[in-house]
Image 1 (cartoon, rainbow, N blue to C red):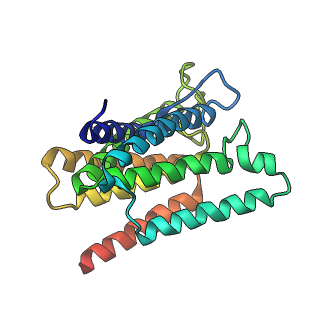
Image 2 (tube, rainbow, N blue to C red):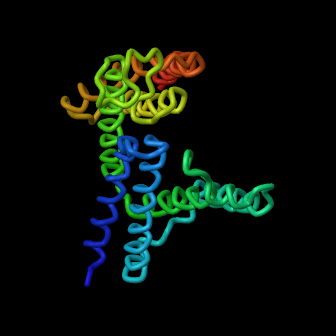
Length: 239
C-alpha cells in the first residue's frame, strides 16, 4: 500500500512534529505540563514504530546504522531496564507516575524515537529542518513564559510570577530546555550557509532564549549559560 518513499516522508513528518511537543499543555489535568506532552509523544512514537517496521521490511537501507552513539544509547536503555527490574518499587519504575510520566516505559519511547530519527533523517538539511522547528517551538515557549509575568487568566502560571517556567512547568527544566535551543541558535547563526532570514531568526531565538533563562531565576542555569557562551566564543575563535 505504501512505498518506501512515502513511508519515509510520513516518518520524517512525525519526527518534525515531535519538535513541538514542549508546547503541548493539557490544562484540565492534574499535571497539565507533563501528562499531555508524554501522552501525545507516546502516540507519535507508537505510530512511528508501526510505519518504521513496514519501511525496513520494504527497504533495508533504512535499517539503523550501528554507530557508537546508537550503541551507547541502547546500552544505557538496557541498563535502565535492569535497574527497573531490580527497583524497590518496580511498578513505578516501569510506568512512572501521572505527575511526571517518567519510568522505563517512557524511556523506551525516547529510545525508539532516537533510533528511528537517526535512520530516516539521513541528510544534514533534514536535521537542520528539525533544529529550526525546535527553535521556533522554543521561541513560542519563551513568549508564553513572558506572559506568566502578566495577570492573563488563560495563561497557566500567570499572576506576576517571579520565576517563569514557560510551557515546561518547572523553572529549572524550562531553563535547561531554553539553554539547549540557545546554543542551537548560536550554531545556526554562525553557520556560513545560513540564509539571511534564518540568520536573523536564530539571533532572535538566542536573545529571547537567554532572557527567558535569566527570568527563570535559576542561578545555576544562568551561570551555565554565561559560561557556555564564553566557551563557545573561545572555541569559535580558535577554529
